[in-house]
Image (tube, rainbow, N blue to C red; front, side, top):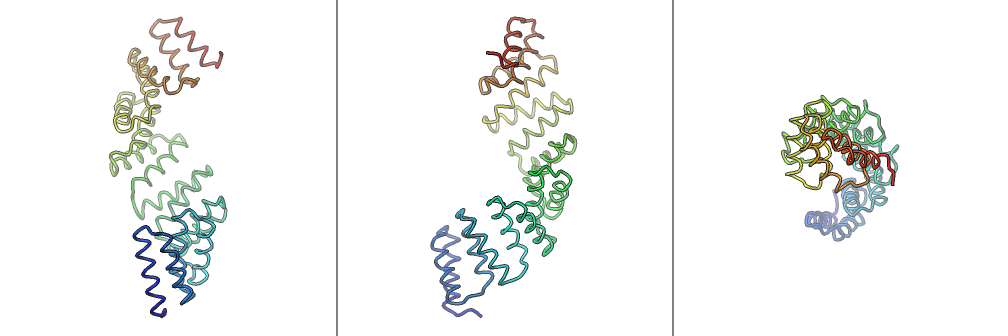
Length: 273
């Protein structure tokens, strides 16, 4: 049992942490451990505070100490993995996430974190495996979005679309997921629905101006060349040096029998001054 004064200092630290007084929390937690050393949970809380402060090296040290004091705690191993990843120690971060899952196979956060690291490394099969494991344990919008991105990168647009739509069903204003769902529909040739989704994206978040380009592509495919031109001109205002966009504009001007404008945009698409 910790000494009464030590327990009181720890509880003072908890109150500070809950009130976002992180410096005060650190002082109280350190006081508690000075009065009664060896408490893994107290070292763990110090690690959490350091992580919130962005002091990742000190957070890693505290989490390692908590593991030494208390054994293979899944939550501690997972948090150690997150700070190691932030420090660029990816190989060791992967090890910690695997150890976290070995300690508790129901740790959805560790599964998600593994999926995210594998996705960043381009290891598609492993990313899908761990994102799906995380979603089985704890379905959430961000998990479906991230799994959708892995399928999207693998050009599996049916599975990507399913994931993005599941995300949006849980988070209807997740503009980025609607955006990628729309691109997936475009890739599948479902042009009218893609346009509808892109318009919804722009209504939710006007910063996603790349959607105008894709609206232009879809309108061109639908033979609505004037609408395509209007959308592409809005896009080129935001991306004046985008060769792909200029090429699409050239195709659209060709379809509208405007050869002079088409030639100009073919020239810009080639990057000619």
